[in-house]
Length: 304
Image (cartoon, rainbow, N blue to C red; front, side, top):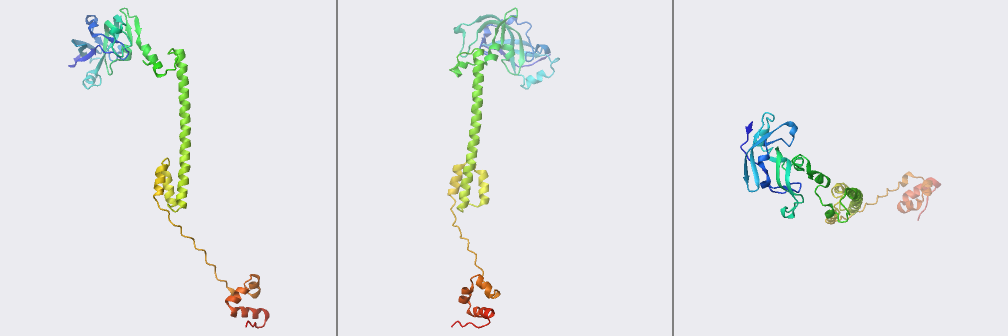
């Protein structure tokens, strides 16, 4: 056995996680015999701790643990290193219970246990263990109050405060109401997804149109447009401002291709005639025109 030189708060007058409270002055410490406890309220693993040096301070009860390091060789180290750092009263025998409003504190919707004692107080990692505090027993171990069932079923919530149109918190009314509410939420999620997809598609189209116009106006190159398309989907205003800041470049007209000069010398009189080029040849080169005439008709042409 190993004594841990550290006090644990075993209980106080505060409202616990189940909405009820245990009065420290009403704890009959002499009936807590032997003053033992388990680890995480698990009795099957054996006794883990024996409590000693009980001390009251205000509305709190403190004690020092003696650890069973035979069954739990690592437990003392876990306590010293802070991994197990709380105590939790378990199997509470309630000798006197009050529902008087004058005994209740703000936030308390359960009873006030005015006289009581525990059958064990465990070492735990988190105080207010649900399995430990959920039920109150009489001296014959009959369940007086099953507060765990109430909290597990309703999660300690007032549904009518959250849903004013709820007619009742009875299970036969509450369950279909919540099922219907979930179905509506699922439909709303699906519609929102469709809306998001539609908006993304419209944004992509708008970005594409803005970039195509910017390329046509010679504000940007097609290469730059491809880069901006990836970066500015969903940022239409930013893209519009960016493009507006880029001056449009004056387009340089594409020069018309120069017509190649007709090679009159290589064409015969008949070819020139078929292509209606005789008049052009006569105007541009009288000497060649006369030569072609002579080759065709065998006599000179007097153009004077």
